[in-house]
Amino acid sequence: MIRRFVPPPIEALRPCAVPGEIDALGAMRQAGYQEGFAAGQQSGHAEGFAEAEARTRAEWAKDTTEWRIKLDELTACNTISHGLAQLLAARSADYLTLARQTREAIGAALDLLFPALMAHAIGAEVLALIEQALTDRAPEEITVRASAETIAATSAQGIPPASSMRLRLRPTPDYPPYKADISWTGGGLLYEPEILLRKVTDVLMNTTLRKDETDA
Image 1 (cartoon, rainbow, N blue to C red):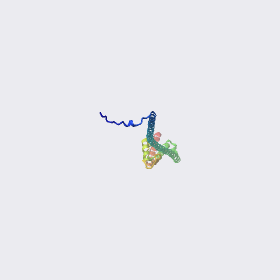
Image 2: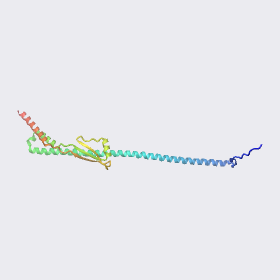
Image 3: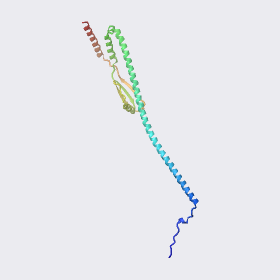
Image 4: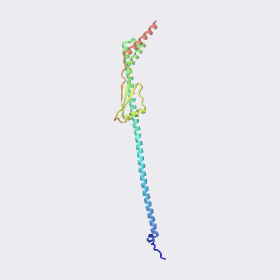
């Protein structure tokens, strides 16, 4: 019986590794694994840190923008509120000064021209009528010019106009959020001599009638 020749495997032709070489190969494999693991871990950490930093920067930029918008709105509202307060305070002071000066001037003139009338109680009534006639004012109008964003923030805050005047908010291009121009118009003197004369005549007539009734 003839047996067919079967060549040995290639591995069999290689020299057998001694125990020292086996240990060296194992150490090399372990070192290579640890080096690759460390490199991958470092790369993953760097990528994760970069993503976290980018996300944090984006959130911070968004929050900063929102805070800046809120600050601009508050600054705008404070600017307009402060300006209106100053304007209304000046208006009130002007009216008080006008009323005082008018009363003093009219009183002095009536005392000089009609001393007997002013010595009577009716003199005070006539003086009050004339003073009111010379201090009554037409409706006023306050105009606020500011940027559209400032006007919107002001309207949202509900800044109320004074009851005797109209408040107009006019958006004006190129105005920064913290700037506002406030102007006051109207409020002119409402002097109607015919009505004043009729009121004074009524006061004098009523006083004369009361005097006649008392004398009778």
